[in-house]
Length: 526
Image 1 (cartoon, rainbow, N blue to C red):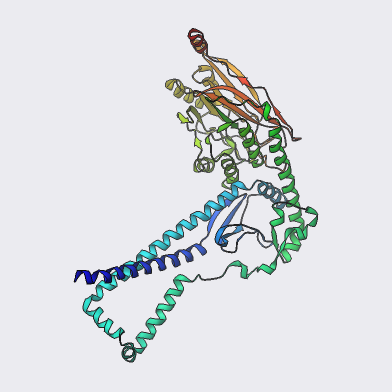
Image 2 (image 1 turned 90 degrees about the vertical axis):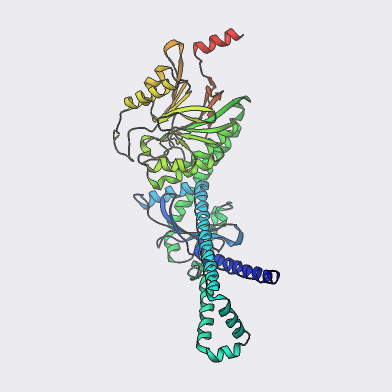
C-alpha cells in the first residue's frame, strides 16, 4: 500500500513546488518592475526605477529633454533615473557641475548598478515569500479537505457535466477567480515609460550637434523630441562643452603619467606603497589621475587625509563613490576633514570600505595607523566652528594613545595642528596631513632619546583654491604623493605635482630619516 501511495505523494509534492515556483516568479517579477529607490546620484536626489527597454534614461524634468544611452545588459535590463532636487544656486552652476561629474561617471554608474541589484534582491525575497505562502495555503487546504471530501470532489471532477449542472454559478466564479488571480500575479500592471515617449520620439544627440564628430559616449546618447529639447538645446550645448573639456583635460593628464613613469621609484619586493591624497573637495576628475600615479608607483594602499567634499552634504556622495571606484581593489584609510562636517561623509566612507580613523590604533595592510577627524567644521564659505575639543586637545589625546602603544608608525590627521605634540614625542615615524592646500615638508622633528619623526603636509589633490574644486580643469596645481613602507614602517616619500597646464612633475624620492637607535642597531649588525 505504501508503495502505491509513494508516486501520488511525489506528484502532490511536485504540484506544490510548481505552484510555489510560479507564484514566486510572478510576484518577484511584478515587484521588481514596480520598484523604485530614492538615492543621491551626482549632485541630485534621484529616483531610480528598473526597466526592460535596454536603456538608461535620464529625466531632468520639464525644462530639459530626456536623455538615454544603451545599457548593453542581458534581458534588455535598463533603468529610469528621474533627476530631482539639488543645492546648486543657479542653472549655469548646476549644468557645469553635472557635466564634470558626467565626465567621470564610473562611481555613479556603480552606485546605480548597486541600487538596481539591491532592488532585484528585495524583489526576489518578496517572490520567495509569496511562493512559500501559496504553498502553505495549498498544503493546508489539501489537509483541511480530508480524504473523504477529496474522494467526493474527485468523483465529481470525473463527471464535470453533472458538477456544472449542480453548481454552474460556483464553477464559473471559481474559474474566473483562478484566471484573474493568476493574471494579477504573473502579468505586470502598468506600462513602461516607452508608452509616453516611444522609440520614434528619440533622436541621436549628434543629429542636433553634428559638429561634435565621433565620440565614444556622445554618439550613443539620444535625446527625446519635443519642446523641451528645442528650448533646452543651449543649456545642453553648454553641458556638452564642459563635459568634453573635462574629459580631454583629465584624460590627457592621466595619460601623461605614463610619460614620466621612469621617474617614479618602484618598490622593492618587501615594500608597500600607498597613494596619499588630501583636500580633493569634490574634484573627481583627479581620481583617475591619482589611480594612474598609483599604478606606475606599484601602490596597493590609499591614504586619504580628508576634505573630500565641500560641505559634507549627502549630495556629495558622488565624490566618495568616485574615489572608492578608482581604488576598489585596494585597502583604504581615511580621516574626515573640517569641510566633511556632519555624519554623512564618515558613513559613506565606511560604506565604501574605508577604515575611518577615530582616535584609536587601526592596523591596515600591515601598518599601524592612528588619526582622527578634524574637530572643527566648515560649510561652503562658513567660518570655522570649533567642536567639542580643540586641535591641541586632540593632539594631546592622540599622543597619549600612540605613546602608550609604542608600535604605531603612521599618524594621519587633516590638519598638522592636530599632531604637533605627537610629532615632537617621537612616538610615531610619520605624520601625514593636509588642509593648507600647499606642500609643507618633509620636515624632520627630533624627539627624545634619539627618536625621529617626519612630518609632511600634502598639497590639494583636487587643485582646490577654496572649498570647492570641481571643474573642467585644474584651478591651481594639484598633488598626489607616494608613501613607501617596509615592515610596517614608513621609509620614503615621493610627491607628484600636476600643473594647471596639464604637465606632470615628479619630485625626487625622499628617504625618511631613521631613529638613532635603529641606525646603531644596523651598524652593530654589520
